[in-house]
Image 1 (spheres, rainbow, N blue to C red):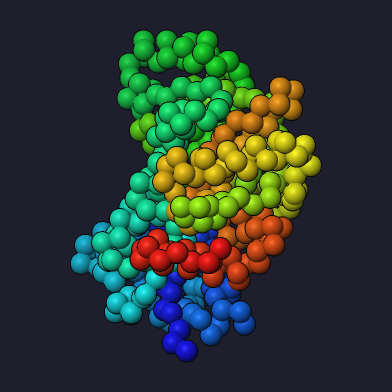
Image 2: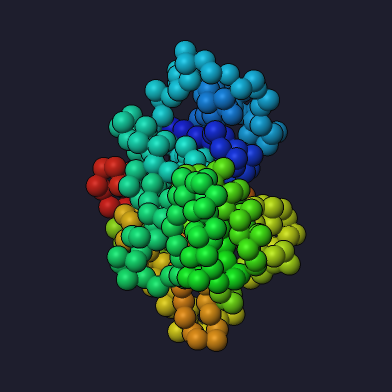
Length: 358
């Protein structure tokens, strides 16, 4: 039996470089389990922090050690985006690049130009899912309920001293406190601040503007944070619903990726009607921005009113030991090796139009 050569692409030029390595390690182990060993040949490709691609033994050593290579920050155009020779042998790509330049459509466009199937959403779904403002606009158009929000730009924040106070006045009047200030185009809670007063708002806006030129401010809500995983292409399936609880002020980057800092309750203790509503809305959110393969959809459940509000979608969720996406599918009866196998097959299905068995 001829093995399918899977190019595992990880690392990347984002603040989530190390998380990507951990996700890739878990996927690599799943591809090499007994269930998948005879089906797939693993070809690892590591994008260093300076943008250079490496494959073979060096990429494998990063997977094995789960440690990033220490390289100088160079601007060598002669080596940037030059592919290792074994890249030509890849029959399906499995990108697990979190954050900017990895899940925002840029790498997806590159892989599409290669004319080789790849796991996950294409350029459109990836770009909209990554950009919180574009995502919110798309979901508003689709009629999906969300928290109140305002969008502003870096130019407004870093404008003259007379304009900035008026901007803060408008935010306070529209959203009140507490509220959340977020860069529009970063993942995994990077650059997000929870603010409760004017001084914190001013500092948070300045901080967010240092990350992105487009910023979102969201009204705070008293709600439970629940998540649902989606798997499929044109006929996606939703997993059981899980809940996140934590002791920190909000679900920030450190809480998200540090073992023991958050508890994942799977399945979530929710009324059946609410669970079903979340699952149905997750599939609608997936379809609304033309996602493919996989996504995790995050919600707020406001118990006092019974509202289910969509928070965001993540089109390339983590696959680490603390990640909700694979754990939700495990609780739904899909093991990690089976999940990885199905994602590879879904990539082929989408590229060829050949329907795979459900």
